[in-house]
Length: 336
Ligand SMILES: [Zn+2]
Image 1 (cartoon, helix red, strand yellow):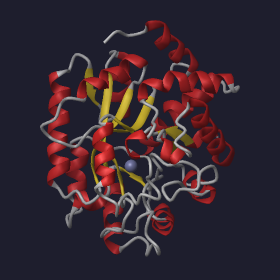
Image 2 (cartoon, helix red, strand yellow):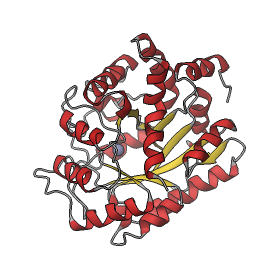
Image 3 (tube, helix red, strand yellow):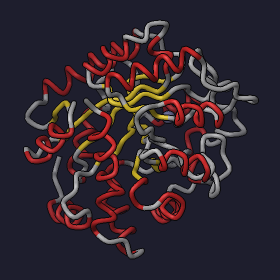
Image 4 (cartoon, protein in one colour):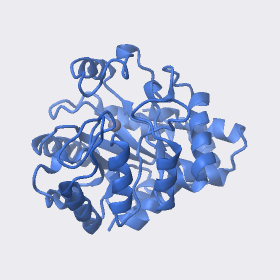
């Protein structure tokens, strides 16, 4: 991978030296498939310092996340000269200083905990740093964003949140229903995040969130991560300018201290289209109509996001917060 040093230096200047963190990125979840993993180096070459890699979503059970953690951790260990498993904020800063890409993990949905909340600690020990409650549809923990009605956070969901608070894992409310998210924000002792959700005020999609939910999250110290998928930005427009409009709206609602990025880039785009088509319950065609034409912003476009924010008048200090600093603050507060 050829590193464009000029482009990296420009990003470094535009974020005032802050650590750059894309908080959600998605490889195909096949434990024997390493084809896409070399692309992590494209993220690093572009100037990303830390990336949160998804290991499971939906009705996953325990085996899938464990197998994916085994694959990714093994890959990181075999590329230790360039990659580094990040489990602490100090570790993230040290990885950046050493010129390595830091990697931590996320799980989309408490199905991964099955009926055993103490699995949260095992996942945490393996490098999982955030987990969401439900994935679009209800599970044992709560309601999904596609459920009508959303019957709210369950007693089991509250037990898992208590375990996450005890262990230091960040709770994420993306993909959850409104009521479940609202109750989770009130239940969690720590700040919660929406790792990859856009403002519904700009694009009315059930995966996006209304301003009042963003405010409730920010009031408790959390952050809202803007998503780079065209289906959530609106009209399948994944241009940088359109993305920055979402960033600006979020900042106008919750201020510059509560906005970050979780681009949700899908490396296996053909696999994604197939998976969406074969799971209409999770991805109803009226809400996910784009198939293989879905546009998305890759992590290696982060330097362009920084440049666009600068052109719109954001200071380097503000851009640094948006592209990493705000997430680091939450991690400092929540991770043990
Ligand atoms: Zn997601």
